[in-house]
Length: 235
Length: 235
Image 1 (tube, rainbow over the protein chains, first blue to last red):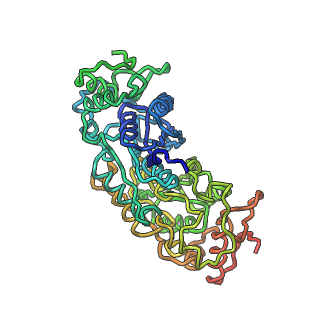
Image 2: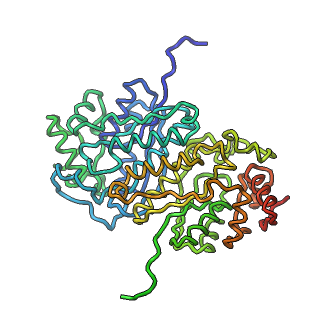
């Protein structure tokens, strides 16, 4: 047998194509994990992010990338999946996270984590990374530490690995970061920021709108970090 | 405004096309719920159950039925979704539930419940029904009361409804029933038993094999209940 470096442990990384999850991928790789990236085509308006995710997985050194179709649009109730609902515009970034906006997709993180858990169990890996953030989205129930802890508890009792004493660990390294801190961390880790995509409602040509909540938070994050946004944003 | 009967509360019912979930649908309707049925096309070998689910939803008085494609086969690891893995044959029904068989689909009930939760939240209903059973499948981690309680806790902290004080309730009325008890309950409720389908590995023509774990448990359940199985089983 070869005496090469020991195999890296594997981790499932939820990768949306946005700034936060691309940074989380870089963090997972820096921590020594072989990253198995998972992206959903869930009926979102901004499908361009799926193409960006493909690029970011390659650029970020993932060992594997799967894109899983999972239509959450059938359930309705969110402006991210229902073209009949308007995406909010030009809101004060400080106000965005306070309530639960119309762009909230019911139980989205629960569904995404559940599929990540299924894959982790099949891969026999113990770590799942995701880019949720409780600062910008403090009003989202499924972006809080309490939610992630409840999910770990569920995984401990609901999987073979869990009941055999190898529970899944959920890592959300950006949970308490401001967007400016995320930008600085991404720069430190060499994330291909120009390829990340944050807009909820891009043009048909794939240009970010600059006015939705996600664009506004991103704009403020780069400004506060004192770093120019290399993505082609219109303002 | 009309002074008709008050609207029934709604519930999401996970309906697989099998005996247990068809019985759970009948129980939900008997308890006064307007049933919104949810079936997954998840890459299972036995896709005929999806067609049976369509029929059973109509026959069972559901107000709505959605079939959601969700490929869990991508994750691998189960004989139910991977044609390269053999489905076990001719096992003693008493032995089936003890270990975790190759037909276990990693985290399947977590994923199904997560999507049911998303729909319940969008529909603004508080009740989710599913047909899990801890007697026949005592070795399945996600068929136990502890798992269902952990899921309710997750839903309480991870949804808008939960943090606003309207948590989702998960109902598994067959959890502690033997298969014979399920058969008797189904007969009492007038479930269209001939349309239910339990086989993991049917023939191309859609006939049950009679030898997989699901066929064996079904056969014993009808026998113990003293009721002939009206489905066209080969033995």
